[in-house]
Length: 442
Ligand code: ADP
Ligand code: ZN
Image 1 (cartoon, protein in one colour):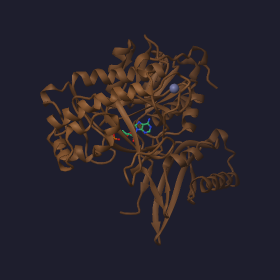
Image 2 (image 1 turned 90 degrees about the vertical axis):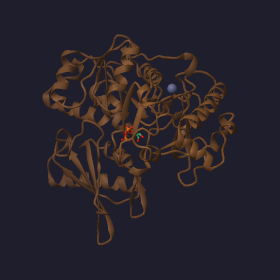
Image 3 (image 1 turned 90 degrees about the horizontal axis):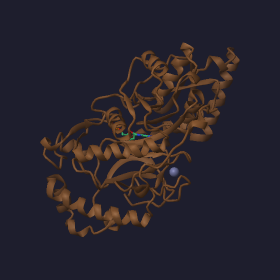
Image 4 (image 1 turned 180 degrees about the horizontal axis):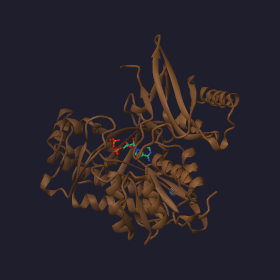
């Protein structure tokens, strides 16, 4: 039940750019791409070497159709040129430096020029408008402040948008709830798992969500499912939107879901998306699952062309009822790195989440433990009991375990063991949550 539905209204921040025809956009991005290739060739020795190695001259790229001539980049561009070798302008000209949270290895360091910071603000203003933020809204930001892009990104976007930023950052959940109650922010930005933790804590403290002024929220930085979105919306009585991005390309604001559903509009006039086959690197047509690749055609500080995010999704260029013409991607299934191979079967934590969250008898908190016993992969998934919806007998415990197990077999093809554990016993995260413990290769 969404209680504040009546007051929800979204709009398009930049009508001209967000609703131009696909042909117009291809033309525009083609020009930007052509300039960006030259700019990178002239200012980035590592990139010049890459193009020289395959005998590609910057002049060979004349428009968007030539994008496939360019080589792919990935995180090695950052690790091999650490820390500042990917900077296309001198460090002195950077207005700010951020770095990825390093979920998978060494930090990727990204410098932003003044124009890059402006671009970032603008992209997030598009997302704010999409998510129904209003001018004058107070925005509670509980992403971590610091090198991580989640905090300062939306913070500076509030300035451009004409909203009031409340830089709460992470931690002290009870204190966060006090601010939500007493300062009455209208919108919130944090990871979806942290939002759930705040909601759990609110329920424990007996705080009634209808006493808050929260109307909408932007959640992202980690994969999450539509089932989790529904929980956040129903339990808190707000609207929840999916904001996507990565530090190497921009930070949050590369794209966002709109009021029409769960697909994420990509700001493709600045971040041109391609979906490619993970094996061959060949571009895939709409609707096929592959790796998401971005070309940041207007970034000055650290531009990236054909940067492979290894995030897996599908893209659609169909018209959206909201009026935006930008292409849309499906919710990210996970990174190629997140994929678990269990007895040869490929599974993503998000597939498991979509099953678990359908069961009312358990909390939306789970951890996946993988081990190899006698050379056979074993998966144990610990899930918390939801005491409110659970009759406490051994029999019902077993029944719930068995029914989740059976559904997981049919959805994922693997045979995990479900272990119900006490409510509140699994770790919570204030930022990105690590859900998988794989002990097979230790
Ligand atoms: P790190 O690479 O250290 O995790 P980032 O904060 O730059 O640092 O993380 C970007 C990554 O986070 C994306 O490539 C993607 O895997 C994930 N991510 C970001 N937003 C979303 C989202 N809305 N849905 C799913 N995954 C997301
Ligand atoms: Zn839309």
